[in-house]
Amino acid sequence: MFFMRRVRRFFGAILLLCVIPATASAEPVITKTYSYFRIGGRTAEDLDRELEKHGPMTRATGHRHPGATEIKFGGDVTYMERGGRCSIGGARVTLRTHLILPRWNNRSRASADLRFIWDTLSTDIKRHEERHAEIARNHARQLERALLALGSSKSCDALEKQVSETTRRILENHDREQLRFDQIEATNFDARMMRLLQYRMGRRGS
Image (cartoon, rainbow, N blue to C red; front, side):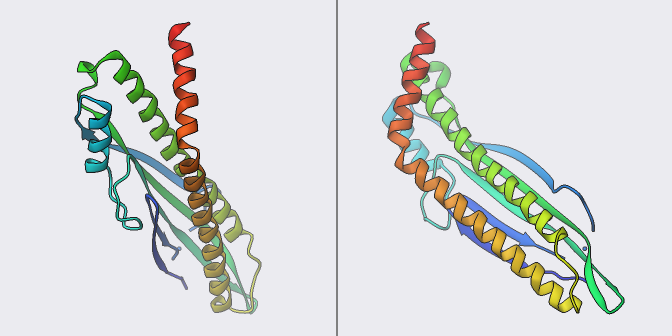
């Protein structure tokens, strides 16, 4: 007996896909990959325009972004019937994260000051997307632990409902944490960039 469900949701730069249907594992199977979109430009204004023109589009906002993280949750749950009760035989959660980051074609031909600004910005973009992937990893581990911890139930149908509710609750928590992170990052962007520029300028001058 197995259970299979598909949920597709979009928030910010993230695509979330959940599939639960059959095996056991003690730790989620997590993979992370990268791809890059290329931009041109020779001034700071050019870079802004290029990021807005070529950055990944998200369905939630309808806008392009300087970076994005695609997140796909999946996995298997098995059920065991014994003595008139149904219990979890095993659970495996999988997570695939794919980070989409900018790559500037003209960096080698740009002024030192513009390279410095770009390096600071691109480092912050990567840090931001890596944090999205980290949040997803934390929730993948939490989901697998929660599924394995479910007690037995009077029927597998009832237990399937518990699996569904547990999955829904943890993925909704995941959504909220990702959204909260984006909101905090957006609010603090200017101040954060100034701190980063000052810090890197200090290191460059030392």
